[in-house]
Amino acid sequence: MNSFTWLLRREVWEHRAVYIVPLVFLTLLAVMYTWGLQTHGPGGTLMIDIDGDRTVSLREMIETEPHALQVMKLGAGALPFIVPGIMLNGVMLFLWFFYLTDSLYADRKDRSVLFWKSLPVTDTSTVMSKLATAMVTIPLLTLAGILISVFLMSISNSVFAWRIGQSAWDIVWSQVPFISGTLTMVYALAVQSLWFVPVFGWLLLTSAWAPRAPALWALLPPAGIALLEAATLRSTDFLVFLARRLEGVVPTAFRDEDIDMVKDSLHQGGESIDWAGAFGLLIDPQSFLSDPGMWGGLAVGAVFIAGAVWLRRYRGEN
Amino acid sequence: MNAIVKARGLRKRYGKVNALDGIDLTVEPGRIVGLIGPNGAGKTTALKALLGLTRFEGTLEVLGHDPYRERAEVMQRVCFIADVAILPRWLRVRQALGFVEGVHPRFSRERAESFLAKTDINPDSRVRALSKGMVTQLHLALVMAIDVELLVLDEPTLGLDILYRKQFYETLLNDYFDDQRTILVTTHQVEEIENLLTDLVFINDGRIVLNETMEAVGDKFTELLVAPDRVEAARALGAIHERDVLGKRLFLYEGVARDKLAELGELHRPSVADLFVAKMQGVAA
Image (cartoon, rainbow over all chains, first blue to last red; front, side, top):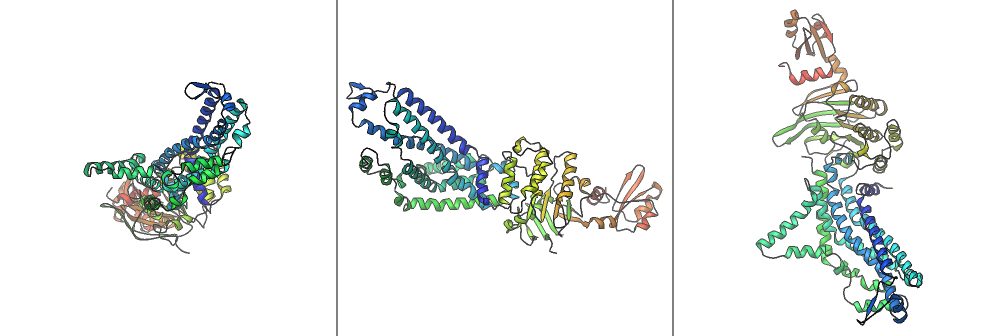
């Protein structure tokens, strides 16, 4: 293993939350999902309201309604990706914030920084290892968490299918888009990491600079600028600009139009749903790569990161 | 042989205070240099400059490199234990070994493990579970397993009890030091490293006030214990320091011939601590 790999491992040793927190959340999700599905699902308490005056049991509906199975397949294929994806991505936003604001501050606080500096590791490598942890390690751990959830939820779905007298293979396992779903997640996580580089850079910069409470220092300047703008110019351009960045990659890296095309493609597979085709229509790398905001963000991020390296090297020498 | 450290006119100011006020120092390979000075004398600043951790004026070369601008190169061949350096509390002993092995090309894990085997440290422990003495043992085991040309120790035994302090220096001398290695050490506990040093450097107010090999110190400085009736005669020979000892007067001379002194009373070799006090306080005290 080269030394950078050791720097990356070091980060996970120090910040165990990066795998413990997703594990806790996915366990919670799997338990709650299973509990909800198994207690309210096949037992008949889940009734589907049709035409407002008639309720049918799930079994009855499958027999009378030809699309019911198709809807179930759709759910079995999509839910295990969408639910944990949204949840663990939300968890990741918090992990990023707390990890990065702590990353160049903790060893200054406990004064072990001089131990790390007594080893032949450049300050650039140190800062890059923190950035790589945010951009690669944490998203990969999140992806692993999502895939474990997909698996656990599919097991739960299989039990459900079996309890309503359907084949677990037909309804669940043949429907879950393991490959195309994973690839889409990888794409989403990768573009998201690139999109957030300026945010990561800012957090690293404040972490390297803050005399104490780096998380607070990370939030104060943006809040100050927004307040100043509101007070002097009576406008909210800066907040809008920030919100546009923090809203994430969906508007730039995915298509929000052509929903009908997606719907059609879902059904083109006939009995099975063509997930690969649907995902192929959704992702839009060309729009992402040609977005000036993405490139501008990378440039600003590079400046912040260079600042963090500089502070790591020269701060505290006084 | 090229000098390990070469400083010429080394200066460092903090605001109006001159922490280093023109230091000239050369350290040859295979020496153990004690850098001794009162608090605020500039010891730590000098070491920080050597390790590329602070900007300075003047010229400074460590192993042929400017430590400030070429810190990466210097740190391949230099290691240090700083007085404020403590190991991170979350780190496990095993992780520390793995990490240093992973990032330091000159680290021998085998060597570190054999040092650790002599201690009560459990490889699965985290640093937070170790006593202060154990943390120092661990740190020392890591550093001594790194084959570097210069080892810098800034108050390495601060806060340790006497047993650990003695053990620390014994291990350092017996298991680590050889003629290829150079050690630069600062400490307040002068007596403990006295027999370890090959070179003695006193620093006060950012200046070097003494820079001698230990042999030269023995030749140059003499202590003379005289009875009260010969005090005036002794004083006339130009002592650099004097004090009362059990009803007699003890004088310290620099560069005064021994045979001349022997006529007046008992001759002794001064301890580094006595020499230090004499040099810092001067005759006035």
